[in-house]
Length: 130
Image 1 (cartoon, helix red, strand yellow):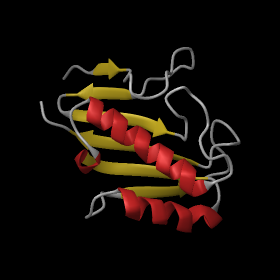
Image 2 (cartoon, rainbow, N blue to C red):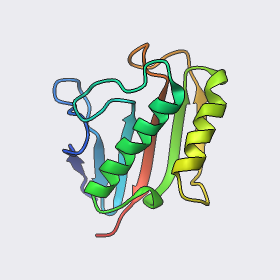
Image 3 (cartoon, helix red, strand yellow):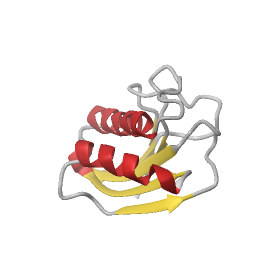
Image 4 (tube, rainbow, N blue to C red):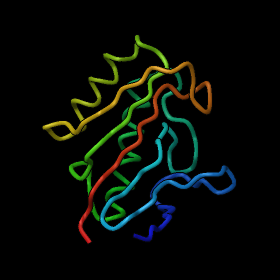
């Protein structure tokens, strides 16, 4: 089945950095890991896991809404955190943001992300209509 690479306009540009935000195969969206960058590419919430999580989920929501879905369309998440001490903040924002029942999520603690300022990155697989 053919796939389509999509660069949504509702989130920061990835021009010149070597990746795309979304690949679409049929009704399935594979969304690249989102970090706490606003639409202009500025970091939101330096040092603040809750603020960064809110921005990450806002990015996911924006992408999904632009492509005909919403957070309820998510069927699988993978979350990367840089510090086990951030788990409570991540869970708080997740519980405030995602519809229940929560989709499957793989949670991984890692030593670092693309920038030392990024505390969290979340990638998603979603299924949207048509």
